[in-house]
Length: 145
Image (cartoon, rainbow, N blue to C red; front, side, top):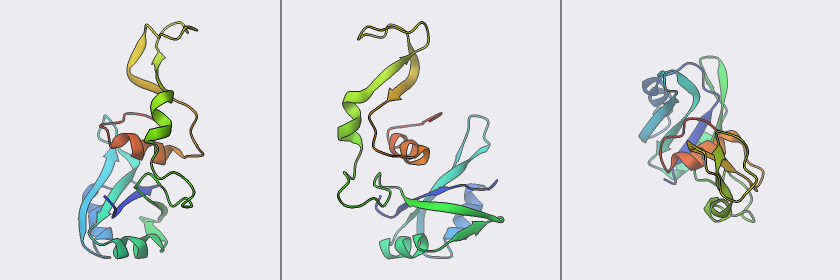
């Protein structure tokens, strides 16, 4: 969604608190605080505004929640890079995503013991963990990056 923002560096906060804070800037259509398998917040989340102008205004400001300054980035896979950069990662990623072995390293081209769901992603442009997490989250639940 074009109005979606990645919010990183969150303090202990729940989805309702994040919604309450960001809805003071404009209409929010979706908010989520990402949680680990035990239900504890992972320190980041996503907020989607209905209006792109509101998103841009919110992103131009510094935000402090519970005494902690949070980082905002567009959640569109582009992260505000110059227009010379490719906006989506998919074309670069597909040939370089391979299963990671849970056993002895296999030097051949086939990996007989892949860990369920665990992949290695190589050959990436400069990218941070949050961007990588946000990208792969669009395909389903990501447990670790």
